[in-house]
Amino acid sequence: MSRRGNCWDNAVIESFHSNIKSEEFQYVKYNSLQNSRVVEKVNDYMSYYNEERILEKLGYLTPKELGA
Image (cartoon, rainbow, N blue to C red; front, side, top):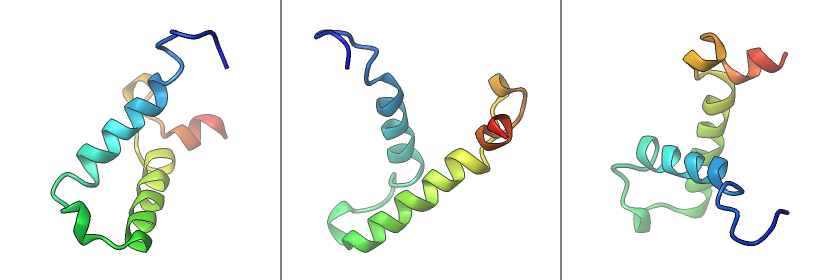
């Protein structure tokens, strides 16, 4: 944990939340989903985010390929 008022602490998770909301839940009525379906959608998106998504800044590799 860093000092109080350091805005960069949450930057990575805030970016992830923004991505998942815009890519996975954009057209979903939140009150129509069961908890199990939300957990399933988040797990599927996390698998995609770490294992399938290629990034230019990583040399067109997935985060999993870069770490391996």
